[in-house]
Length: 172
Ligand code: HEC
Ligand code: HEC
Image (tube, rainbow, N blue to C red; front, side, top):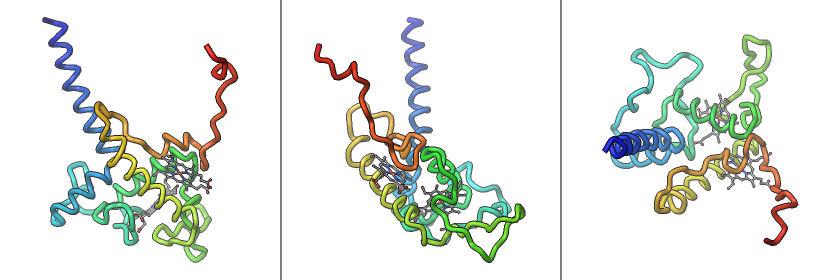
């Protein structure tokens, strides 16, 4: 009895966590749907505070694969994840703008600019991950964890080759 209540609670909690995970890990998937179904829809709850975004997070102007209605803050949150999962900084994909010097005396990054190959590659990667999740992984029965950049990259700019430890090659 108590056990089954506990199970119910656990299930409810996992459902919540699942929703949260999907929303944070594959926001694009949902946002794309939302964008297609109701282009008028405003920013989701937890979006920008009334009064607009801080100056450093202007509305994106050059999104080609992410949903175009994302706020500056939402794009930043996704970028933080990509950078973390690849173990890189923003300037791996974004070119410096020699004409704009930041408070630290270094050139600021031109985020909408498309000149770096890494940025173009990241777009291809993003589309690949969406395809993997929506057409394959998340269609599996009991699918729980979507593929992310980190699934392959694991903190490296280029995924490292996997070399199985010698023991695993022994036949049993
Ligand atoms: C792995 C490559 C990669 C890294 C690392 C990365 N970005 Fe991006 N960023 C992109 C790509 C690709 C786009 C364009 C997405 C699209 O076309 O929908 C983008 C778009 C943006 C935009 C929107 C520009 C516009 O106006 O269209 C901002 C702002 C941005 N990134 C900020 C950052 C910040 C801040 C960091 C570091 C925390 C960062 N990025 C790290 C690849 C990267
Ligand atoms: C299924 C595995 C996989 C996933 C998932 C994945 N990548 Fe990759 N990525 C690769 C492989 C493999 C390479 C190296 C290709 C090569 O040999 O140049 C790569 C290369 C890259 C590069 C170029 C690195 C360089 O120095 O040239 C960028 C940038 C990149 N990935 C970004 C991303 C981002 C951003 C995501 C998530 C949106 C992502 N990747 C998800 C497998 C993956």
